[in-house]
Length: 254
Image 1 (cartoon, helix red, strand yellow):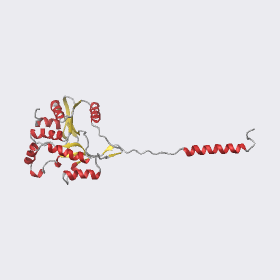
Image 2: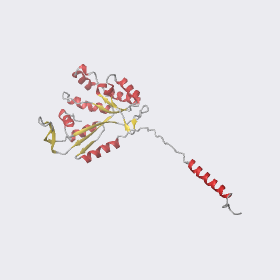
Image 3: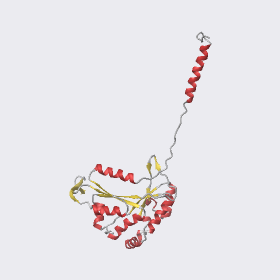
């Protein structure tokens, strides 16, 4: 498989495209944490627990009751204070089994690893960029890529007017690198989509939503209202009327 170059990654990030990092559904090693509130799944990025190591962060999810996590890369990589060169070396040499073990920790805690936050930076090498997608694959994370827009010229934001403060646009050529987007999706078991209008973009999100389903346990409560008292009361009234009439001038003839 060809290497994803810095130029291709730049097109992926800055061009008319988008990537969704979604976790592959698998068998849970523990009962999953149900953090659905009124039909909305609640989760958090592990950056919210950046003051503690990964194991303690996972315990934090369990304590708070959060069932989904977007994993922050700082929880699996060396401390950035060690320097960029050491982090680069670690990325290129760390066994992918390390990331598989990370996924297992989340599964054992009943927390779904939903996404992996791997930030591209200009000083990254092509090997680092490719390695990022290999890490995502080892974590069980799929990448769904979407080529957005039409080929040709399109208005792109270039800054703001110094006089009005309004956004200034300039027509730029749009060249969607569909080959690279397809390659990225293939590497992680995801899928590539093409959207040239807003309606198609919405359809793609609906299709992905059907592919990536999460089983949730929802407690439903049913409130019953007893209606028999009204029926019984009506029956008693009718019975009383019958008895009254039977001892009046309107009583039945023998």
